[in-house]
Image: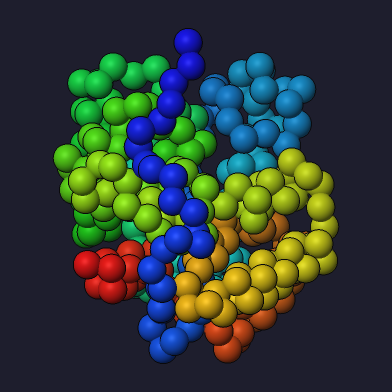
Length: 289
């Protein structure tokens, strides 16, 4: 069987009303910082697929575990340097396992988005009632830990079921990042639920792990992205630039200088508004009614 998706309609970017960001900026920029937990006996993001069937998979687990132990703190230092508040895509399992990260984010006023319980458990193959309960637990745990009920959501691995958008909206979530198909926010056909741009292309896992590109490649891609989006928005239709980061990837010491260079270029670009995902959604709603 083949299924057409009815979550959103086709509306090309050439047929939309102008979208102006604060201060007349053309590009809204946010950092999607993935704060995740993995289990040692379950598959997950891997730098080497040859050991993923082993328990424990110490090679891949240790690589990922570098993130909360070391990498995220290096990234936080860079974000602070450039005045960027992260939009934290948060596994709820992080709340009780890495409370120091939660405290650091609360101190800095990060936006908090739900990102499942862990990145070892994908939202797939779930019955509606089971998924509803899991979503409720994730959102409640994040609210308990951060003091904020998440307004946004990204599924682990960007995975949803056909019920996920409706269930999220029923629980007060206002926007999702899973559908990486646009340069602007747009309303889905689920009342009250937006889709906000995210990226699988400018995502450090894709750039460095999947494609094997280098730090200078990454800097060039970031510069090209913001410059092209800025040019595209010359007609008064603003764009969103989402940069997806993982502490176990761009938190590595040898990649940090290139993340530093990339951030320096973007946040100092005269046409860029640096924001959180929540702030972008608030402005979009305020100007589109």
